[in-house]
Image (tube, rainbow, N blue to C red; front, top):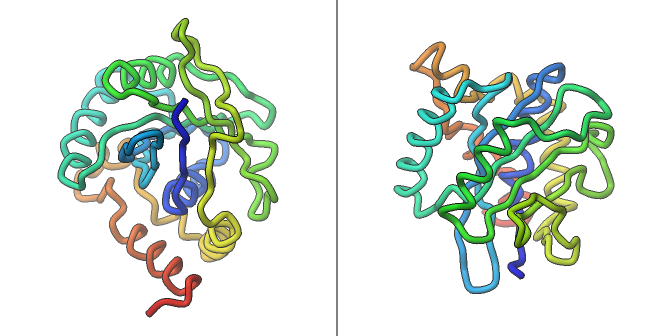
Length: 204
C-alpha cells in the first residue's frame, strides 16, 4: 500500500479555505506527484464553498488538470471540510469527484477535515486520509502510511497566517467564476508559504 506525504502548502491552504468560509462546506483538488511506493501531495486548489454543481466542478477540474500538468503534478485526490461542527459525512459531489480521480490515478486519496479539531494548534493533524479499498469504498488509510515531513513547522506557519487573516486573500474556483480576474492558483499565497517555510528552515 502506498504511503502518502502531505506538504506544508497543502495543509495550510486547506486550513485557510475552511477559515475563510467557517459556516460553509468547502472542497478542493489535491495535487501531487507519485514515486514508487509514495504519493507526495504538493499543493491543493480550493474549488468550492458550497455544494458544487456538476458542470462547474467539471470545468474546475478540467482547468486544474491542465494547469497542474504544467507544474509537473497530477490531480491526486480531493478534500472536504463540512459546515457542521460534528458532521463527518462526505457529500455526493466530493465522492463523485474523488472516485473519478481514482479511476485515473492509482492511490488517489480523499481528505476529510475534522471540524472539532480545526484549531490553530491542533497537536495532531485534524483530518482523516481515506483511500479506496478493493470494493471501491472510501475507508481510512492506515495512520502509519500518512507522513508529515515538517508538522511542527506546518503548525507554526498555519498559526501565523491565520492570525494575519491571510484566509481573506484565498481564492477558490467559485470566487474565480464570479470574477475571472481573481487567481484561483493562489500564487501569491504559495510564495508566502514557501517564504515562511524557508525562514523556518533557516535558509536564505
